[in-house]
Amino acid sequence: MKIDPYKHKERYLAWKEEAMKGISCVSKANFEIIMRFLTDMEVGANIAKGSTKGARSYIRLNTLRGKLCFFAKKFNGGKHGLLCQGT
Image (cartoon, rainbow, N blue to C red; front, side):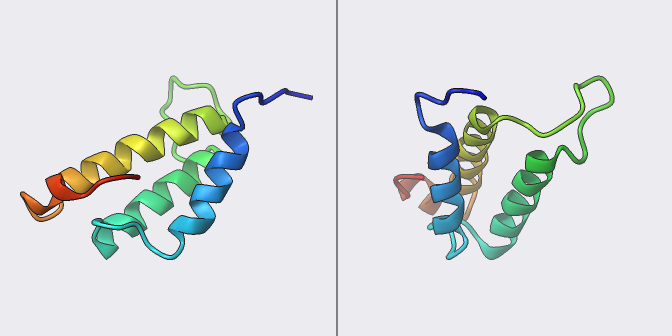
């Protein structure tokens, strides 16, 4: 049994449930791409040839969602993406 003192699993699952309603300042198309990518990473699909096969950890999933949402917000509609706060 793995110990998760920083509650990465709970934080990711809570975000995912909240994100199903939509992510602020991210277009519908980008939202669908982000969610499809994260779902693939959860089960370990579309992993690079040289990478270890299998599902990604919740630490990695939290990191990926943060980066993806940041870039989607930054490039969504030019200057308006810069005004969006939070993840």
